[in-house]
Structure formats: structure tokens, C-alpha cells
Length: 585
Image 1 (cartoon, rainbow, N blue to C red):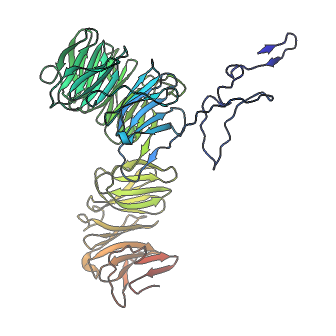
Image 2 (cartoon, rainbow, N blue to C red; image 1 turned 90 degrees about the vertical axis):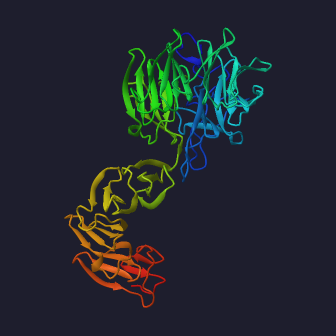
Image 3 (tube, rainbow, N blue to C red; image 1 turned 180 degrees about the vertical axis):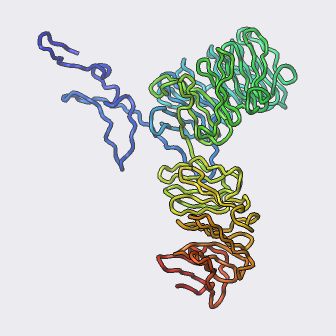
């Protein structure tokens, strides 16, 4: 800034615009994110003096990715995370991709690197001394990327045997582990530090605390190596002090080393004093013995296990709130948990613990806030099951009935995202229908129809207890309008329910010309029933009487095809059509 005494004005004010002669960011900030509308976007720009001449222009362009959407179940497996030390960008190893996430942009995924040819990434390690991100891939190969621009760099040389886990110690030493044991790279060669039996399983995790490297080997236990004394320490296993031989996650909190297992809760070891504390499992504080993840912010430890997240205060030494994952939108058991610290412009405002259930949705937990749950982050979206048998669209949402107990799945067409399924307590969905406002769900719980609002509220139920002679029957087909619910049952019975009075009228199979009933439809106060051998049966809703069936001059069977759709019978205005079987009106 150049100030002129007495004039009260500044001849040049470059404050906040970077080094003189440079513009380090856009007018809106260092990072700009926008979408094409429809094919262009011109909202990013710089504020420059009118006479400025641009000599060099450098832009880092990324490829933001909207959440992946699948029409079949899409398991989302998170393997590891790392955080850029300056920007706060989160590196996430998900399925076969290495993703870069920004907490404050839409979409959150800034860019990704496809590592499918290497079976994805398993371990991510930030090397601040060399400005690198080290990646151990699923096929055991090692890779390195620049923290500055993600350009490919020379990786650490491959060890003599394929590694399962990889890490840098606080002193910058390189360690790897596999079913053969623990190895170290000294900058020139790899050296085996601890060897185990060939029958050992995969190395599940590496961790450092107090100068000791801990290597968890499936089925073997935990190997230990003292980096200060440069010697191995006695291994832990279920044969001596360890609660499980399937340790897959570690966390150091104060003087405690927490060891999370796949089958027996969390072991606790005081690494300063060298003694064990009581194990946490489903016999005392936890809901499940399978630990999805452990993460800590300040004195708050969050334990993601089974259907819950438990909080533990290390200062007070007590358990606090337990959060049901279903209450925060996660439908599966906990699979992974990690901390995203509030460091850098790409980081969240508060230190945040992210919890995954493998569905592609992450719950954001902030222990230092008054409200623990701070919303969700969507990475991918897919149906909960591929066992689909009934489909209906209402209000821009596709509802899909399932037969495996999942309930009713929902797909938001406009936003291209799968919503949380509606639970029906394990019941099979036999039929879906709508009156244009609500959804009617026919289940296998005897004869049962549930009425749901589109907001997910159960408004009422019609079942066999309201309608005699129907309790043990299954729904074959169902139609609904503003006045009626019209149903055919597997017993050859037809049910009409008056929605105003709740009156249930049942026509038993002995009162119909056939028991082989198929699909039904409602049109202008008439209920139509497709039959196998008696054409289209007709029921007058107002009088409660059966009319003469519509029969064919040739074949009467309608093959159980939907009454209300081509090619058997279709409705159009006041007209009723039937193709292939000779009658129409």
C-alpha cells in the first residue's frame, strides 16, 4: 500500500491479494467450485488492476465426482485414511479408488485415482519430510504421490515378500508386515525383524506407541519390536495375555493402548506401566464383540461396534452416550471409524470422527460440540439388497418391495440417491399400490396391508383380524383408490375395504366361478379381477354385487397378467381394453 500524506487516499492497495505482482487465488477465495449450467461456468475470476498484463497463469484443475450411484448393491469398503498436513484434504482408500475429499465443497470428492489394476489401496501414509503420500496397494505393490500436485513419484523399493501392512515410524523408519512377520527398510535394504510360522494369516494392522512397533497378524496375535533397543519383544497372543488373535485396529489414548478385535471386543494395555486393564466386550460395556473402529478427539473416545457408537471419557474414566446407528441414518453395523482433524481450508470446522457402515454413507460425529451427530456425508449410493419383487413410483420416488426382510427400498429419482429403507420388521413385501398420495404395502404377515405416508409415517393397517376368513391368506394383487382397497388372495378370495367406514367385504372362493385369481384393478367404481379360466371378473363397489364376467369368444384365460396393463387389459379414460384374448370395450 502506498499512502500519500494529506490526501487521505491510497494510491495502491494490494492488501489480501498475495505477493505484490501476483494474485494467489480467485476473487472468491483460494478454491472455486461450481457446476456447468448447462455447458459453461464463468463465476471464477481474479481482481486485477485495469492496466495489469498477465504474464503467467497457473491453475490446478480437479475432477470433482458426485456420489456413485448403483442399481445393484454397492458395498463400500473403507481401507485407510490420511490427511494432507497443510490443506486438510482427506485421502481415502475406498474400494479400488484413492479419493481426495474436501469437507466444505459440493461434491466433497475433489478427485480420485483409479487403482483397480492394483486391487485398490490398503494403507495410506503421509511422509511430510519428503512431501509424499505413500500407498500400499491391495496387490502388495508400493506407490508414492507428491503432496504438492499428486504427481507420481518413486516409491519405496518392494520388500522381498509381498506386504499386507505398511507404516512410517515417528523417526521416519519404514516398516512392513505380512504372514512372514515384521520387516524394516533402512534406506537401502529390507531386513526381517521378526519371523513367524508360515501358517500365520494376513497382517491386519501396524501401530507405534512409545517407540514400540506393534504388528497384528491374523491368527497369531501381536508382534512387538522395540525401536530404541533395536530388538524384538515377546509376542502377545490368546495363549498368554491377549484377548483375541484377530486384532485389526489400534489406538493410543493417554497411557492406554486400545486393541480392537474382530471377535472379542477391545483389549486395554497401560504401555507406560506395563500392565493390562479389563477388556471391554459385550459382557460389560459394548453392544457387540466385533469392533468396527476406534477414534478419539480430545478426551472423547468413540467406539464403533455392531449397531452402535459408544462414547468413553478418558478424563472421567466413564462411558457416556450410546448412539444407535439407525438413528443417524446408518442401516448396517459399524465397519470403520476415523478422525478428520480441523486443520487447513479443506478440513471440517471441528475435529470430526467419521463412522461408516459400509453403505457409502458416513456419519459425522463431533465430540467437542453440544450435538454429537453433525449430519452425514454421502460417498456412494446403492440398494440394500438385490432381492426386489415389487416396484412403484410415487412423487418422484421409486418404491421397491423386497422379499428378504429388508422392507421397502426408496430411490429418489431427482437427486439420484437411494434413501434409507423402511423397515417392516422382517416381513416380505407381496404387493405395492398407491392412491396417488400414500403408499399401501401388502405383506406376508397373514393378510396384512400397511398404509404409509411418503414421509415414512405408518398411518394404519388392514389385516385378517378385520376381515373374516382371510387371516391365513397371502395377497396376490392389490389396487387402491380414494374410496376403496381391492385385493385378491391366494385362497381364491376377494376382499373389498371401504376406506371411509372401514367395512370389510369378503367374497369367499365358493361364491366365485373360479379360485384361480390373478391381478386386480379399480376403475369407475368397478373392481376387476383377472382369472385363469373365467375371463375378467367384475365387482360393483357401490352395490357390493358381482356383475357378469367378461368372457372371451375364444380362450378365456388371461394368464395372470396384470389387469391394468398391456398386453392383457389396460385402462384409458372410460375405455377398457384387452388384447390377445378377443374382448374390448
